[in-house]
Length: 321
Image 1 (cartoon, rainbow, N blue to C red):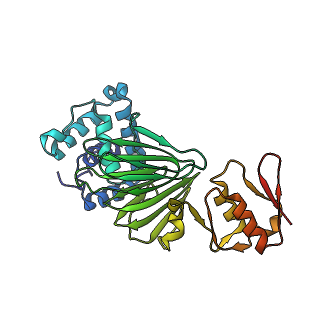
Image 2 (image 1 turned 180 degrees about the vertical axis):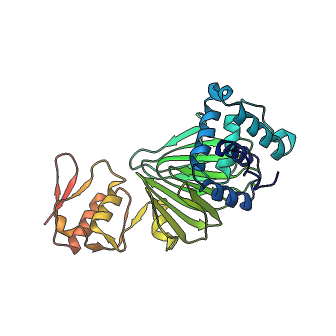
Image 3 (image 1 turned 30 degrees about the vertical axis):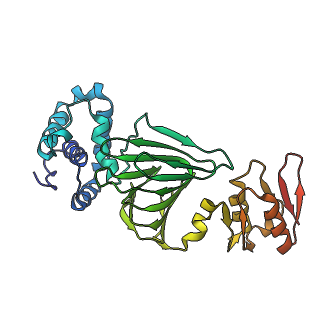
């Protein structure tokens, strides 16, 4: 059976073959292209999701013997060395590792274990991992680190993190952030997740970014990809200095609207700045301030715009005309 031999049988049987093929590393770029092409077929995405659910709900496996048989056959044909072959049917978590490692997240299942890390509002934290990689967490960030013998996986629940990844050809390093998956290849990059918006910025090396709505995209240093709900921006060439200024404790405001600048400043404080004069929301400001330094920020804004800073009883500040 070759990489593309998944055309026989019904959609569920084909999905079972693909499911097994993707869990057996290594997975070639050609195989990925063929999988995405197959998945665009009518009913194929739903069939693949159904196979995933069957794997996770082991009590239902006996109800679909044809799917079980097809998947067992595919695992046997695509098996890597014996140590990579998993007993049936108890290896659902291992069966999904390969899917995650190649940067495909539609059916990714993160294990319930792993190390949980988080920062409070205004806090930043550096974490050194056992493999030599380093993570820097920005304000109000939460993620899970999960290492296995075959993969290194990070699940970013919210916030922003800067990744310096140690090279390990045997264990891919993957960051999942909601609708996007980032596969690193010995590199430095920044990922921010805010609601349904995900920003991926590559500083050094190479990464592959994928989502359910976009095939694999490889970024070059100095490029950014933004995903917002169902909308995906073109790859952008940018100056990475403002993006990574937070790792040095600063916020670069050059060219920001006042509304955007206030939102950035407020990420680091519990007592926010509020804009009471909405007509200035789109006014552009420049400069930089230290994270958490509301005083310097409001002083700078009121020096260049006809606004005054009003301190409130709760510690917040309102900018009024």
